Length: 182
Image (cartoon, rainbow, N blue to C red; front, side):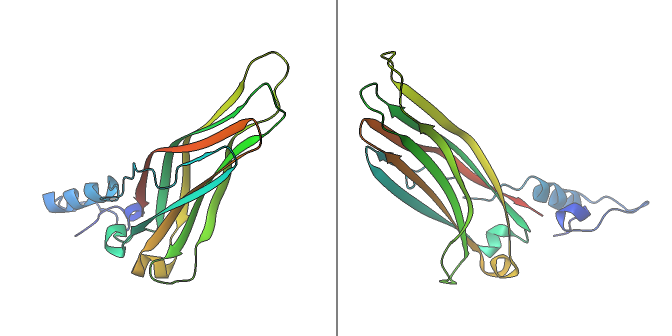
């Protein structure tokens, strides 16, 4: 494989270079690379709570799948809901986390991001429930270590839903996908 763009991990074309189809195909394949088999639409990290709930789901990206990438972009499309009823002064919140560890290291996951994506507080006496919807898209970039490039990386997706009396909270995964940056 010959990549002809320095930003993609290759070398730049020079004046008078002959453009071969194989080189162009390799370059464009690298530029458009979405990590194969890495779209997750499951419910592994979803939470629903009338109290406190946490959940995680891990996805392994092998060194072969990373294909020399320097960064992995984690894209999360999710829905987070918190609802407080008029009969209480309770609170509810949801948090989403992304953690990482080198595949096979056993060192434990370290946090990349931890974001509160929605929250609902006490409601007024207007007779209406208060609902806060958050989420949408969350995107974070993980800089790969030399060992992660060699051995692969495990990404742990997590959510926590916390709700006091009279409130509910939930996080629902819609789609998570990964992109490689070189």
